Image (cartoon, rainbow, N blue to C red):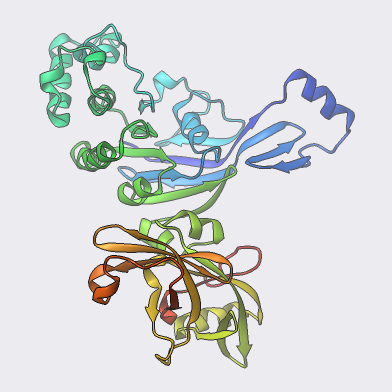
Length: 403
């Protein structure tokens, strides 16, 4: 088992010949950014897919890289695996610098999104293949394959070929093929994305159990924040090749560093309101749609510590933290109209229009009056409020004012 350290890792995809000639004619200073396009930073050297990635992964830690498509998470994983060349920076597995070490010599195992099983081989032979290449004794190969099959509950499928297996079973075989190698580091690149929702839930639970059984270092890539929240000891949230925040699932949920993290983590995503932060002496409050809302003492202390002044801000409140109140309840509230009421069984997801924005509220059906337990009607008037403890404040650049 081993720790993994990434120091100032950068991945640059060079221009093609024609693009390079065009770029040379512009005579720009080396490394000067030429332009920012969606998901891409373009310099004289080429397209920067991953920028200054720094991360210390502890031995036996489960790290999840998460972010939207094209954010650089799979590229980062492939650099760790040795399948992509590192343009700049240093990668250590244990105490060994491995930038120029071949993938087969890094003592890692990787599970791919598309399983990558040999169709002409049985499950047993697929799992044993890498061990046979190492010329391992047959009895040791057999022991490892059968132990892995037992852990993954696929012993009865060892003589079948991949075409005779379901998607979930194939994924277990792919994981088993990695387990038998007993690697220092286990890499997984969106291994559940090809499965249906029910099977994804089952396989998430299997991976959690597997982690407890084999107790190795895991680096897991996904675009699904639910997977990230349920699997990771720590989560690395990426956007446009840049790390936005690193923290435990609870840390990134409770204290997002910026507007992107706040909107990306959480389902349904956080609601955002245009607001004003008001400072009078050493006291703060916020105004939303002309209504003043209090801030709790801890938030006010953090704002004072940062020297925050009155300014236009974005206020965030998670759907489960917004409640309904009556117009005459004496609480500060904003008015909204119901657009869509989604019955989710034990809860209702209420889409409302407030300030011209779609504001989503998650309400427990048990807490609602009897007439609303089956949902709300389109156009119903509702009043929205929240407690001072649950708000998140971001400046106009999207940076948290209290992080």
